Amino acid sequence: MVRFDVSSFIKAQPGTSLTLNLNVGPECLIDLEVNFLRGTVRVTRVQGGLLVQGTVESQLAQECVRCLEPFELPITLELEETFRLPGAGRKLETPFAVTKGGWLDLTPLLREQGWLAVPIKPLCTPDCKGLCPQCGANLNLESCACEKVHIDPRLAALKKLL
Image (cartoon, rainbow, N blue to C red; front, side, top):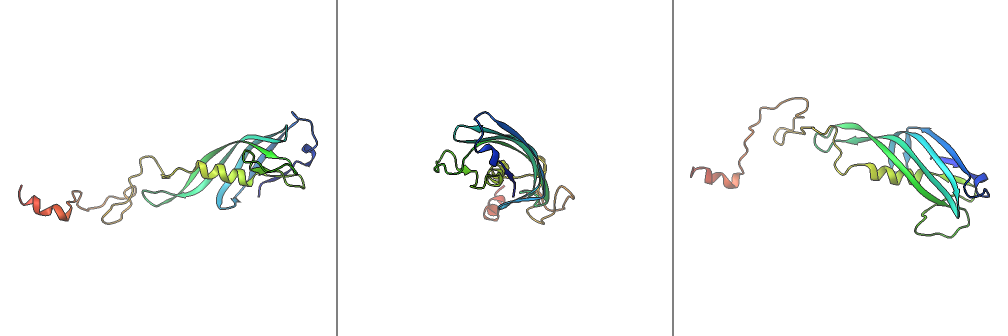
């Protein structure tokens, strides 16, 4: 859980700011495991809430979609979100809130940004060769002796006509 005590900011004047250094890990962001979280977050008191802005570097354990090997995916999380103050009504434009005790929990925001940073098809390297469809060999590590030209058995009868 990534939490900071910002109780002094609840009564502060708009424009007051605080810089928080983040250096934790490994961390579980609800359902997203990260190896570390490093960065700087600036918290500014604004009208009706706290504006959180910053950049956080992290790394996720992923599996390559081509070769199925595990790898570490570096990600950068750009944060810019307003947190409601305690007692303020729930609004769609401000889904995150400071707790009644004055704690700013960045976990849900980091989780959301983390999932958005994961590519649809994560690759260990851009030129990953993947697995051989016949023998399953990892083509990044070894070559296989499988037949490269594979004819669809439904069309094999047409080959006799050539």
